[in-house]
Length: 354
Ligand code: ADP
Ligand code: MG
Image (cartoon, rainbow, N blue to C red; front, top):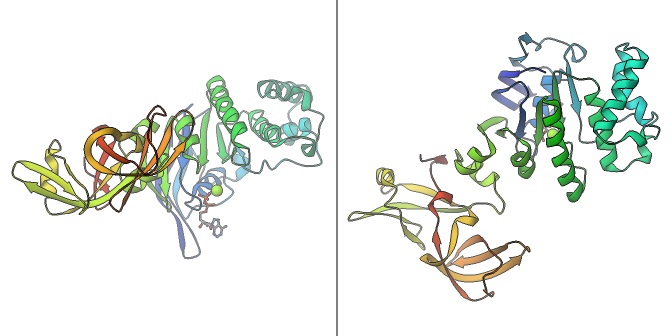
């Protein structure tokens, strides 16, 4: 295993800039996630790292070796695709053994490695089957197994779980964590699914329109989103966004949207934004039932078992709160919220106010 270092990658297709100055490092043994919406350039990063595509500028290092100019075969990476990309006419065993055969690995060693990988992934009794005789989850395991037997320096995963149903996705997520703990492999994993990113990633690189928005641990991204994109892309239900202005009233600093006003005097640095437009982001769990500055009417309650998602209108502003299911509230009733400041974030011109 080795560190993967990506520096200043740029890539355009025709006149479309797909990656702009992308730099980050996956430490040796780290599980790193690139998270971002569809079309933001995630697969392109993997294709550049694997050598399937050539960057316009920038460098890629695996360990101390610059691989940017190497052919895909020379780079010691293994990629797992969303659509599995198994050879349909080959058995599971032969699918897993394929790359080892191509590199002239002796037969007994191939057998040992395939069985070792199959045991790890619990697919030993499927080795003689063809891909079409497998379920989606089993196929994905084979695809992962095919990567594991190669014992590459770096694993590349391109949304490997997105074709699986929700339950299997959860199971596979937990298994991937276990697998990574066992193998201590260097992993670059891309997904549009924030839940996957937050649960799998030791480091998350948040990408939008080919540019890195923020990098950090899942907790850092959740607790300190660097801009409105990061704030709204991560978290479900999405963070509530209020646009308004900062006003001074004597000693008090107030945030005012025209409909909603609340005291933000504890954030002394907001005084510097007096008169300016700012955006306040409120996590759904930062709204507490009880006397507070946000009063309105309940519009809809979604019962999710362990929690409820409550939609309320504060005048014409829609607010979503995540609450404990014990509360006895009905649609149409009046409601009032106070704020838990830890989950309230301030932005000026889209960027976080520290
Ligand atoms: P993601 O994996 O995040 O969904 P991709 O990296 O696949 O995004 O694609 C990023 C952008 O680059 C998209 O707008 C896509 O249409 C474009 N793109 C990707 N590959 C090519 C290609 N070979 N030719 C032209 N455009 C491409
Ligand atoms: Mg993709």
